[in-house]
Length: 284
Image (cartoon, rainbow, N blue to C red; front, side, top):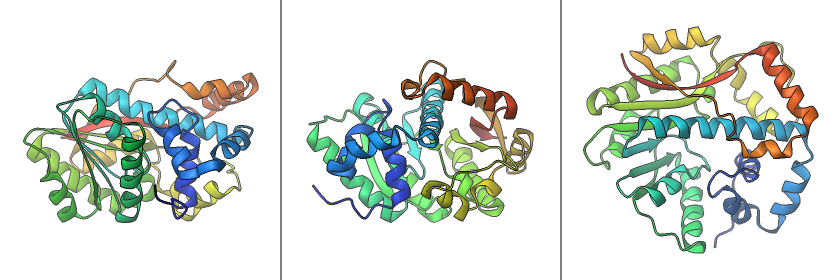
């Protein structure tokens, strides 16, 4: 088993957060990456209100993508910039007909592949479907084309969460161009959880994760409104096929929140309205 200490603090922090949920393989992956410090770190973070609010957000985002994937189906699945998500491993474990290609940039995917191999070995997993873990630059059309060549014939379902907020407008357009070309040729859907709406004047925390978001201009990269997001995709030749339903009753992490925090989150939602949606897009 290799040493995962070189993984970036932001990626490790996000993984640690999801280790408190029932998202498949997250708790096991936390133990692999964090080692003996996992329990102490989780216990400390479990008392952090900001951490717990983010925990709810990221679990909801993950499950919204899964809900759309289940409703739309698809045997050929490409996840872009998957980070330390193990959706592909879980899918290949239960669906014999699936070919799931799990991608990210080379440095991330090398760590990811080792973690998956450790999880398979430690839990003696017998995959039913095919899982490929490959490096891919989603903004490089040649890289995407080469990756897609590994799929058998048939429509594709392309997934992402936590990607568009790191792209400026021109980069978003480039990604849309590539995905539209793929879906026009192959058929299928693009499920993106990244329909984030900019909230001006909101105070952010001063912790490491907030600093990471500020350094990548995440707030500035969000859409102005859901209407502006829909218009942007229409300009790129894409339209909404379906929006994810709510995930009420599916959040395992609610058990960590006190009634006061739940009331605070409810009040914030009432004051600000929706700040994110998950859409399935198709060529217009």
